[in-house]
Length: 306
Image (cartoon, rainbow, N blue to C red; front, top):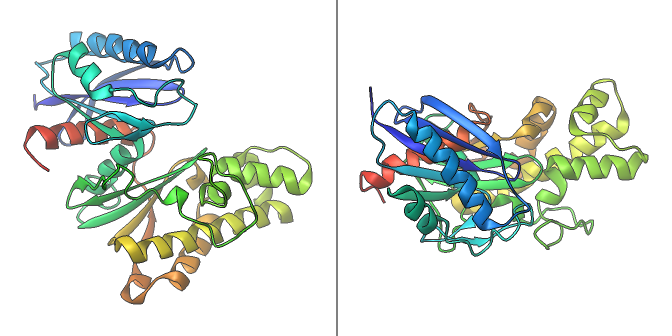
């Protein structure tokens, strides 16, 4: 059997741990609920316990571990900042603590960076020299992959398009504390809030999508506005990072071409020169992308890749 890495995905609701080979095949995986309100040490203990359980059933020895986690990850695998979805997560020396718990080298990425690595190496951006990945879900995350490696940037936030300013200035608060960021317009949460504001009725994103298909004008307007902001931001952001392809991932992709087609048009309007031709494509991987990307990071780090 080919070598496998221990891979970990730490999210706000679940912890997923698995064994993954270099081709991205998940040999086995298990998950538990994240003790999100119990503090960093409780989360680390849950990760370590599940990892040891998975390792006990490993078909061969495992000598490396990759982690994709919520929060901004610093140069030494520490959580430099995080939302309150994980209580006390900011400041956690995650890499060092997991090395102590597991007794093997550990590589830590942000969850969207890990997912982006999966898409960049094995997914929709496979074969491209560079890719900008944007994940649209309850929030909006982003990552930048060049030559098969995550580009972290000076502070671990390279590619964070969710906090790029929107061309609209409606004073919408962003969960990061800023105002009028992309996340405040194009996340699933933002669209649900805007639909409720317009109509007085609370609907989830799936319901809004269904209403748009039945010619609900407000549902269509909410999605159209999100698509316009998304496209304008992606076109503008790519003028800075100059990626060869843009990959859109996350649950908001359920909106399909109703979101992506107008977003592509808006991106072309903002793009500079030849970058007007950059493709904006849906991701190939779903919820397992973070786990697979974490394993790829472990293999890359172990082989001496930068």
